[in-house]
Image (cartoon, rainbow, N blue to C red):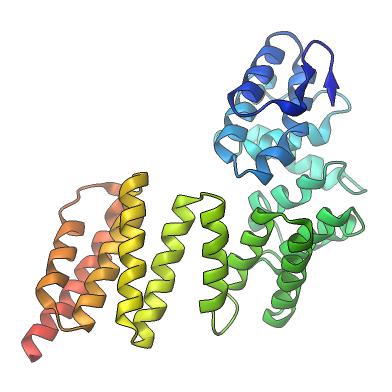
Length: 312
C-alpha cells in the first residue's frame, strides 16, 4: 500500500517500519494508526511482537483516549499490540469497539490477536460470537478462527472438539505455509493430546526455523521431561543440555534454570546424585525474583535427592 509522503512501504523492514510510524506521529496520527494496522500481519508472520508493541505504544501515547473517526479497528489493533503498556481507558475503548462491531473485522489478523490478548478475559459466549462473525473470511482468517476455537480456555468446546478444531487449523495454516500459525496450533494441541511427544517435536522443529529461542528452550525441557518419565535418560539428557546451551547463549535465565533442574532429575534417575546436587546448587545460588518459582522447584527436587541418599 502507498501512503502519501511515505513512499512504497512494502519493502520496509525492522527499524525502518518503526521510523516511518515515528515520522507519521509527528504530522499525521491517522496515517500512523493506519500504518500500525497495515503492518500487523507482517509483524505477526515474522514473530516481531516487540517491534509491534514499540510502534503501537508510540501511536497510543499520542492518541491517548481519542479514537479517530473511521479508524475503530485500527485503534483496536494498536491496543492489542501495545496492551502491556496501554492505559486502562484505552483497553476499555478497544473492548467497546469489539462489542459494538456487528460484522467481520476488516483486517484478517484482528480476530486472532483479539482472541489471544483479550479472549481469556471475556466470557466464552462473547468469544464464540466474535469467532462466528469472522468464520467466513479469507483462508487465513478461517484458519485463525479454528485455532481460536480450539485454543485452551477460550471457548466452551469439549476436549474432543478443541482437538478437531486445532487439527483443522494446523492443516489450513500448513497449506498457507504460515509457520507461526502452525506453531501456535501445535503448542495448543500438546496440552490436549494424551501422547504429546510427536506434537512437541514438530513444534520444536518450527520454533528452530522461526529462531524462537525462548520457545525452543521450553519445548526442549518439556520433551526432555517426557523422555525422562519414559526411562530414556540419554535422550532426556540431550534435550536438557541443548536447552541449557541455548538459554545461556540467548540469556534466558528461567529456561536455563528449568534445564538445570531437568538435568538434576536425569542425574538422580540415573543414580548420579553428586551431579544432581551440582545442577540444583546452581539454581539455588541465583538470587532473582524472576527465578523464585525455579528455586522452589529446585528445593523440592533437593528434598527428593536427600531422600534418595538416605535410602541408598
